[in-house]
Amino acid sequence: MTKRWIYSALPDEVKNNQLTAYPEIVQRILLSRGIVKAEEAESFLNPDYDQLADPFLFKDMDKAVKRLTTAINHKEKVVIFGDYDADGVPASALLAEFFRLIGFDNFEVYIPHRHNEAYGLSLSAVERFGRQAVKLIVTVDCGITAIDEVRLANQLGIDVIITDHHLVPEVLPPAVAIIDPKQPDCRYPDKMLAGTGVAFRLAVALADRGHFSFKPGQEKWLLDLVAIATVSDMVPLLNENRILVYYGLKVLRQTRRPGLKKLLKLMRLKPEYLTEDDIGFMIGPRINSAGRMTHASEAYFLLTTTEEDLADRIAKRLEKRNQERKQSVESILAEAEAQLAEGESAGRARPTASAGQACPNSLPGRARPTVSSGQARPTVSSGQARPTRLSGRDLPAVVVCGGKHWPIGVLGLAAGRLTEKYQKSFFVWGHNGGGDLKGSCRSDGTVNVVDLMAVANSADQSTGGLFADFGGHKMAGGFSMSPEKLATLEESLNIAYETLDKSEAENEQLIDGELSLADINDNFYRELARLGPFGVGHPKPIFLFRGLCLEAVKRFGAGGRHLELVFKDGRRLVKGIAFFACQPEADAGLPQAHIFGEVDLAPGRVIDVLAQIEESFFGRWPVLRLRLVDLASSAPKN
Image (cartoon, rainbow, N blue to C red; front, side):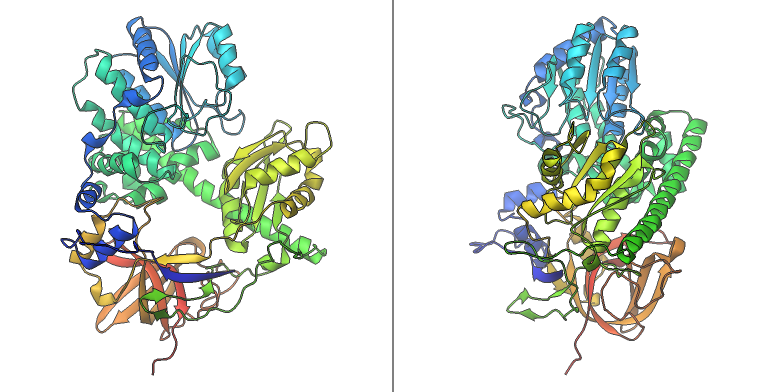
């Protein structure tokens, strides 16, 4: 598989350029994002909290507010039922904190156990609530498919309000109210809120019409939770999500939460400098680690406790859980490599292409990128890691691996790493302790994994089909199955793969402009930072740097998995880093064992670099550096 470096597309024609007030590179980035008018640019660069839509545009919002107000005024027992990830946990914390702010305390927060309970609202949980005289369940970040569970709740005299953001099924649960912007007849303009964003809009609506003792604007202090969830759940950072994260970061930088303060201190992050990257790469994974490794309640209490000692203990436990998560993933990857190598030595069949089918991936040599007429047309390798034992060419289109002792909570992370390395779709399974196998899968981009599982499931002639349960979206999914079906899983998936339409995996890397190291200065970075926060739908700009001279190269981090390059520009040295860019030190050494194909990273080499620009605060003072995206060898200069 190859990647081409190309410039981001601009509008065909920009008449009467209205963006001349901004630096040229900012103009280009705005235009490539479809922002062509001055008022659009002003709104984008300076988000306004008052631009958020009226929460009562949500279908059923009025019903939800009325039912919740009744429950609060009559002090009915309420359960907040949340998901166990970094969206569901903040959503649960947000609604719980709102209840406390208005003086309501007859509620319980219930977050299911990732390993021992089913996803979302379950029959067993509803039965438990019935025995506890619960009168109202409010789901956050889940519930949209819980038809049987809501029906049981109704039979037990429990009303249910669903707040969710996932795709809605054809038949909806019989709930008192369903607040999900993806309902076809929902008039709320932004359909892409995270689960915590939806819960926040419910809290705002309650504050508006509930006649509680609540100061206007007080809800803004909940936006740090919305920012954590919105970035962690990887919903598009556009429209209202951009506004919520923009202001949520302002709150997070002055957070009042003892748990977050303790966690930030352990991670050596300075609150005043927090960015969306810190949420995505540092805070979010630690919130998720609780549910992955033990129980998500640890993360919930981190976000909600007001006790300094408890906050300190929980923060340290979460840091430990995160380290355990990393070790679990590395252990799974090592065992997966051994399984793949064993399969190859046993004569694993290699895929063949037939008419109308996608050919197996190849790994051609990396060509030097060239730019002509303002358009970059490089052809380079995909940034794929060079395996020590075999390559993606030795594997079938869909690969299955697993182990009974592999922790279920980290299977998705492992599947993602294997897919990235081998450029194949991976299904990774573990044992849930209850008799079934449970797994996660990731697509290489050529096929929808949900469609793949559906075809394989329907083709299975045995009772119940191949899977006990499955779901997800195009690139990622989950499944459960009985152990006796495992023997045929890989074969069934590959047969199903051959019947599906294939799409080309992503083979282009967009460039927002070309720079030199001399362009990187504080003034330039301040202009660039105005375009943030960055995320899905609005990625961080990527720039091309030609002919950079390598001054030094080194590994860093546990096992030497991370890469640091030092570039020299006259007397100035600029660092570039790439995380998880190297094979473990025990397997191979530099300059070959890295993810950038055949590029020689020996000091003194001259290379072309694609990179983002970021500010690091880990030293005594802020330093601008490059976050490496892709590399290519430079052709000799004439």
